[in-house]
Length: 86
Image 1 (cartoon, one colour):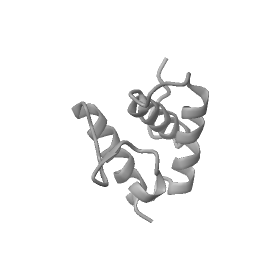
Image 2 (cartoon, rainbow, N blue to C red):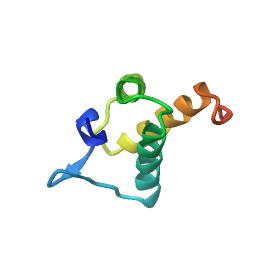
Image 3 (tube, helix red, strand yellow):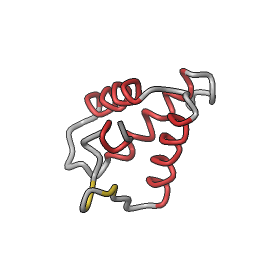
Image 4 (cartoon, rainbow, N blue to C red):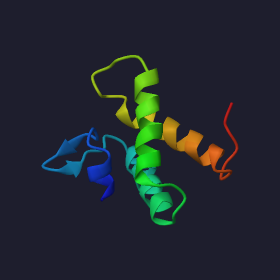
């Protein structure tokens, strides 16, 4: 399963991810790279991202990558790869 198949809610245009800011693309690439290195599975990632989306106030999807980054930060902290920010 590819990263895009594992996370169907990702903003897309013609099947490709859409990034409004460079940091969004970097956060996406970091998650893909960590998965490829075996740090986490896509089901783990989907669960973490889903939890962030469910916990956030409803919006029009414009904050999707903020949720993505928050999930990534928490996942990296849980795996001991980074200190949890405060």
